[in-house]
Length: 171
Ligand code: ZN
Image (cartoon, rainbow, N blue to C red):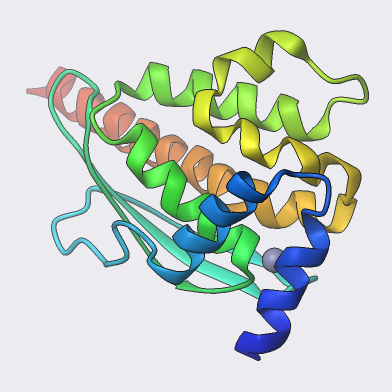
């Protein structure tokens, strides 16, 4: 991945956002938060966006009571995808699975609904800086990739839960 081109690409993709918001995305790209694999993860997913070359592993530590205790990601991709990963990890850590899924739904709506969903715009909080990405369909996939991976990781966890409860029944 060519860093310089990636940087220019990020600038080009967010021309409608004000400078402060651009800075937030570029800062998360440069210093991604929770950029590590979690050896004790009990839910994981691998998200790839071949169109752009974004490729990330997502690890979650899910605690009792359905709370997301720790989130980590690792991989490479464009500035928008990496900033989205980084911000996602800071926002869902400490949330319940239900709360994280709700945030994910709002974020996907914000980027993919034909008409700007004002309810979701309010619900996503700091993630509203990605609103301008709506106008660039190719970039929408970059921004939503890690949220799709989160969806998969939580699905994975739900399946394990089902298996566990089946085992419990046979005891
Ligand atoms: Zn990308």
